[in-house]
Image 1 (cartoon, rainbow, N blue to C red):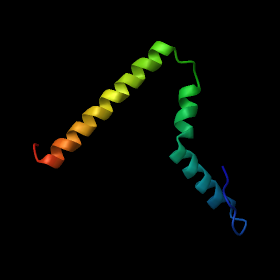
Image 2 (cartoon, helix red, strand yellow; image 1 turned 180 degrees about the vertical axis):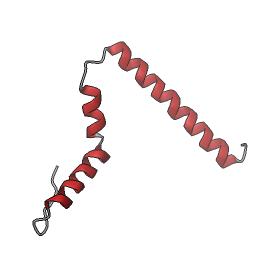
Image 3 (cartoon, helix red, strand yellow; image 1 turned 90 degrees about the vertical axis):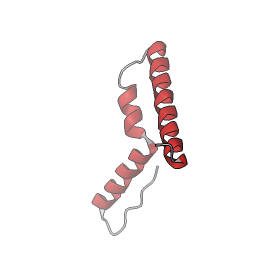
Length: 68
């Protein structure tokens, strides 16, 4: 990942780098990889995330269709 430093403004380049890392999900990945996650825990977490996504999609569809 690259960030350009313009006019020796390192602070601005550092902010841009942090923003890029945040968008890419690097911080989230580092937090999750800090400790070992058992395969069963990973599966449970991913299933819960899928349920949340499905519910969110259902809410958006219902709102769009005027049901709610």
